[in-house]
Length: 172
Ligand SMILES: CC(C)(COP(=O)(O)OP(=O)(O)OC[C@H]1O[C@@H](n2cnc3c(N)ncnc32)[C@H](O)[C@@H]1OP(=O)(O)O)[C@@H](O)C(=O)NCCC(=O)NCCS
Image (cartoon, rainbow, N blue to C red; front, top):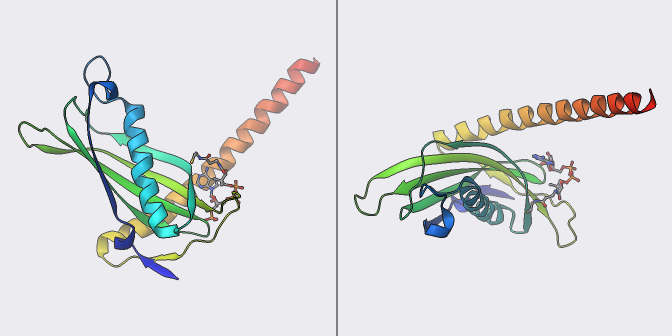
């Protein structure tokens, strides 16, 4: 089965209330990450049509602060599907409710993995990019996956070195 990017496109709008902000009246980064995770999951659900879990959120740019009272709109779509995983891109805009000015405030890439009700990995449909932008994101998603895999190997090796050093210090 093959799905289009447009069939995965998802959107969410939130109004930023005092409970979402820090003492300067700016949206908390963790709250924005939660909105990003939710909107990303919607696109992944629409692609996989099964349960999905967040495997990673590997790159977020917080470009400018979101203020108390702003409307935040998040848009997501699947960039590429692999075997059981999907890379989803999420872009975030803030709208000043008094002036109507809209600005791009954040972007993120997440990987979701499709699982069944027992947590077993599920194969996902392939994604067919149709427009030049979708094709660019599709190609870039493969490069980011390769980068993630290299980083994962590097982290595992660093962990082994730390464990070996700790053991030798404990035995000396
Ligand atoms: C994500 C998870 C299902 C992967 O399971 P796993 O047994 O490690 O699976 P594998 O190593 O066989 O990898 C399965 C797929 O996940 C991808 N994956 C695993 N860890 C990943 C990571 N950290 N970042 C990106 N992709 C990852 C693999 O690339 C692979 O993709 P593919 O099938 O498309 O090739 C598992 O680590 C998990 O359940 N993590 C907790 C998820 C969670 O609780 N999220 C927060 C709440 S939703």
